[in-house]
Every structure is written in C-alpha cells, then in structure tokens.
Image (cartoon, rainbow, N blue to C red; front, side, top):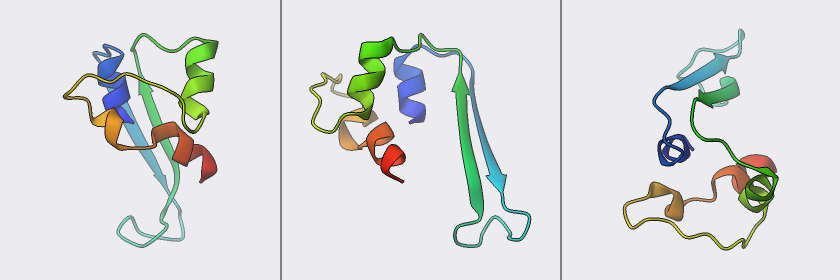
Length: 78
C-alpha cells in the first residue's frame, strides 16, 4: 500500500501500527490497527470504487509494485 503513496507523488508517508496492550509486537496478531497517511494526490470517487473492486482494470507502470498485490481489495476483506 505504501507503493501507492509513492505512485501518488507523496513526499511524506507516515506508517503507524497500534499494538494490542495485551501483546508484544513480535507476537502473532499483535497489531490492532494499521494507519498509512501521506500527502499524495489522493483518489476521486471513481478511483476509490475501482481500488475496492475485484477485477477492476488498471494500468501500472512496469516498475510498480502495485501490479503484484490485491492491496485495498484484500485489506477490505480482512
């Protein structure tokens, strides 16, 4: 997902993990929340809809990591 920030021309990317108070970071399922914030270009309503839709068409540059994952789609199912 951070690769999306770079693709959106973000110059600042903040990744924050909230760890459960009952667990330590190295333990399985210790992260309760992931926050990824950036100052990139953002998405309009159509882009958000496509980002969350399985099988949506998207053209990625050859070097983009985005073409390998399911990104927001799989995050939404989680």
